[in-house]
Figure (cartoon, one colour):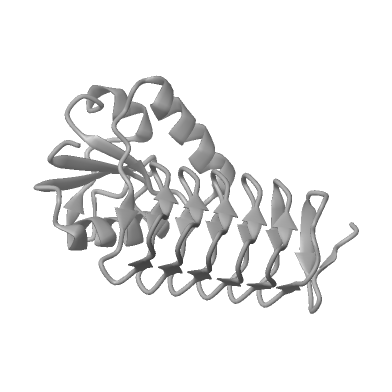
Amino acid sequence: MKNKLLIIGASGHGKVVADIALKMNKWQNVKFLDDDKSIKSSMGLKVIGTSDDVFTHIDEYDIFVGIGNNATRQKIHEMLETFGASIPVLIHPDAVIGNQVEIGNGTAVMAGAVVNCCSKIGKSCIINTSSTIDHDNNIEDFVHISPGAHLAGAVKVGKGSWLGIGSLVSNNINITNGCKVGAGSVVVKDIDEPGVYVGVPAKKLDY
């Protein structure tokens, strides 16, 4: 771990990430990169270049991808891994993390989130504000659990999936890779194929 942190993305999700980093009080210096050259600062922190400039800072800074879109975050995170970047885990001081919980590099756990014992969170995930992940969950890489989403025990969420705000997942459910579960939807049986699922109970949308 280094004493400087560089966040890629200075708006939206990136600002929340920066807020967590500041509250963790582990870095003497926090700065942003952003591809919108009109943004000179965010959260009172300087924007020191675009995402293409990350390689000039990779030896000096811990690097974190503060981008909400799962596919974009995955692409940049994997590129950073290839170049040997130091990628931290960011956990808000007001999150609750149980015993024997594993959390992968590049994951952000927001304020009020609860991750209960024996759960595994993959890399570069977003565990958003006041979401809950109960015991023995397996959240794979590049997943976004939105604010106020609640997952019961022994749930598995596949790589790159997104659970919308206020969604609910019953216990012992498997959700495959690349799924989107709409806001307020309730998942009560396994989701075996990628797609968009909405409603109570959640059903696949056919376009």
